[in-house]
Length: 364
Image (cartoon, rainbow, N blue to C red):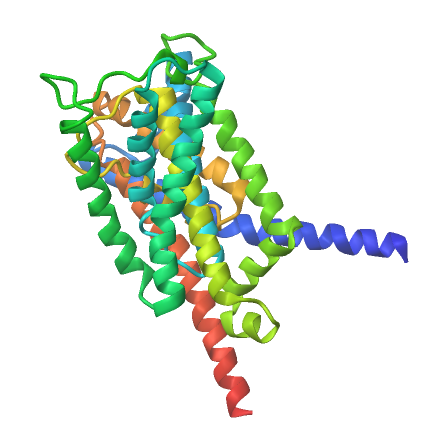
């Protein structure tokens, strides 16, 4: 019996992995094939030649040298944080469009704390990280509370809070925190800067390890704790979860707060590890919005978020190399859009399938 149980568990794990990876992999392959066709049209070359040029440019631009590799990791790191933030919301059946605003507020408050002189380095870095966690959680908790208590749509509320975050950030960057004669703040204190373990020449820093640790912790939280089980249960069926004695409203607020904490932490580490100063925002940073793509591609799995963030980071890093190869850099956005369409289609088909099952059960 024990051998049979082990074999059944192994088969279950393999089936689960296959179901989780199949659609994302197909989406990536189809997106790349369509991108090749676009390159064919633009350059007037054959399929194989266009494919070779496209993939060669992407590889060289993202992994072709030590500098490119580090740049890809730097680009992927904030996407791990925002991908995790979106994944937590998705697992609860929520759509936290406000990850962008929570990320921006994390950057702003990290800049505020980072500019304070005379703090011991370890304490200063801890304060920086805590500032991002706290403001991100509070910023996401507001629409979460409104959703739980008033039933208001979290999508609308979080979108509005994104614009508020940009306005607040620009007010402080151009006002109280402004570096005279610029549209930035002063550089944060050296004691507040995250360690760049490959030297100051490269921007890669320990935030990548913090991001990976967060992914592991979110995985442990979802699948190894009672609270994580409750959040996933709410995402699968709020009515069934409530019938089973789970406090749905509390878990909605909790999930939004955790989502915001991850986004705010991402913003704080980006400021402390990469930017070192706040900038006026002409538009959104797009890290929060790209995090939606990361979470969708990873099927909201925390470990999968690491790999999908790396993929998007690689695509973003290759934009300049694509231009040098006379391939429009917009093809990166096109690939991401195609991936979203295919992955979202999978969710739609599953939703329609569940709806048909419910209809069939009612008819019986």
